Length: 352
Image (cartoon, rainbow, N blue to C red; front, side, top):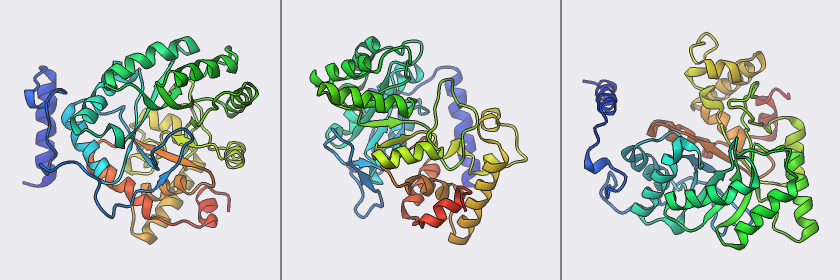
């Protein structure tokens, strides 16, 4: 029996168990799950992780950020998060609305189980539509803190902007949470850069803490249609110029274009409606072909080249990834060892 046969059987059994709601006690969030190796969790010596700094966050922040949105069971979380941590990863992205709070809870259980709160950076998000107003930041953050079993998050993002609300009201609400020591830094997710700049101008005029980061889509492939309603990308030349000029850290979601640079993005395969709607275009297929050409020359998967493009921008950028398997994490981490020249970066993006 091959590995694929074995894994296929296990996945089928997992789906069968899920369909009848059967969970072993050892798989429940409150269970003390041991690491696969049965040894205490620690980052491996000589790992290839790279780190950056975000204002207000004392710890160095991993340039590849682990997304928590798609992991729904404690065994999944334990294996995926342990592997990421052992590879040198220390930054996790979650949100109040992800799966009704399940993702917050699983991340919180894992952090407590592994006793690593002082070693990790938590990015949390609150005030998603239709609650995208400043008055919802505090209550939703409080729920997230309770789920995470902690008293403070490292970075809090307003999950969606509401342009009917003056930016000053958002800044005031964030600063109140900062003074209460419930956040150490904050920013906006899916905010226009004009609104971010206006928010920071307001903060400076009032002597308040500024936005420390913005989280919009950024990838080698251009997002044609928002993956979700109200989403914004910052891959266009004007946004890249603003980010380079201001050196505002960008937390780039869908940094690998949701699998467009894998076999899922085959131009002949139109089975994934979301992928087709958001990423299928002639220019993106040219970018995909160039990534594959460079990857073939370097003996790498194209997705590693696409992620390396993101990490080689001339401004602070952190790539959010959402792997479902250890193999997907492994191929993502190959990007950390890729060196691209400025000319190669422009060539990949069809600028040369």
